[in-house]
Length: 290
Length: 323
Image (cartoon, rainbow over all chains, first blue to last red; front, side, top):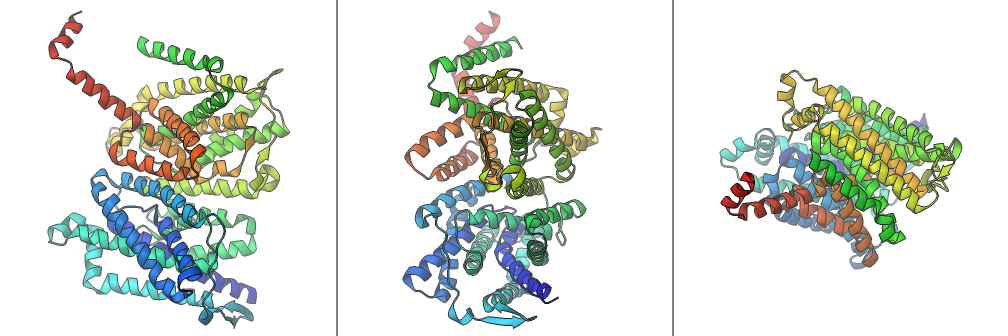
């Protein structure tokens, strides 16, 4: 029983890590209608920039945690202004393909700057200890990840449901033209949401780096998992993303523990079953097709 | 119609003469182009004609390639056995995956195909006894036909060339047939085609299986050509490359995917000999095409042709018609 409890905590922390990474993707998809396949690359940049900061310049994880996401958000700003804004008339599918091409470009830029070695970030001393629950010792960092994930979830929920900005975002989700007609600068909303998505991706990269490591093609692995979470939760739904992240985190952790050869297989199987049974995801709204 | 036959014959003769002109390196490059062209053509049935953008087509390529490899190593290297089983394997896979995938469309289709192909990838990656795991399978015997062995690159090239032309002709006939027109109708407006009384689900399902089968054929050829197969050929970047070939060449045309495959393979060979950043170049080329030439190479050719025709004075056109 103890060992199952331990897996439960591991699964939860992994799930919330997935949530931190995926919620930006979900937000962008919900508002812009663009499935940002370069989201994994932004996540990767967050991790690599944090590595450079901690390894060379400041040595401080906390500085990296603030600076790296801001740099990634700036990259996202450039991407939105230069690549996406002039191409909204091409249709959503073309834009998805654009971000796909961008993922290729970013992949090589990262391997050009940082090489192809496996890198890692050391956990800050404040979170380096370990903890005992269920008779097992846990790194404090894992618990911190759970806490951070929950805080972000609550923050996003609060902004979306309780503030004027959230109301605009929700309105944009259901009818973009109408909200534009009501005098809201929808282009500015798009840019802001994309930048916030980038910020969250970069933040996720820094948080995940000590747990998952930094290596080439990390962005593709994470992107695939993020897409699975997105589909299970329902496109464009933050609460769905949270539920799905935890579900995927638990399934992945438990199957890796019980039937290690089938772990990825089970996650994708879960996604296929849910897509067929509930095509809009667990908590998804009906999203108009492009 | 006769024009088509002439074009076919000329390109066949030109390609068949290639081994007498080209060096071995360039001949192998041409074989690779033709194999990937079949792969891109099969994906084009879905992406270009039916309007279903799949990001998991490497699954069929991989199953075809691995079936051909495993059968050649353990049972028989006879071409009819290996190719037949590769087709059967990819047919079965497409029949199963298709049942799930055609229920959804748009982004969901893209992600579901991606998920299934990653399932196949992780299966191949992890079942080390059967597929060699991450090492892949090497030393696969060359294909035979009776007592005849396709023992050198030139013979393999002719095999690939023959299969390419058969596949091209079959796919062309299918997409030009009334069946193919229904697929185009589904791409343009599925609801309308459905309301006209067509069972669109069946059409999409059969198109999915068709694409899967030819994906398997190209995979089997790749095994013959390389004598080696690794899990990276089943990874989703392979699906991505095929999608890029289709879109860069021109989706929804027959010539497009072939030109796309040629451009990408040639470009990769040239770029890789100078710099390591091949994916960067591929990404930039792809972005350029999506933004500026959404109809691909074929689209560029068509608009050039149209401009050339437009510039001709009108009376000349009339004269030629009278003659």
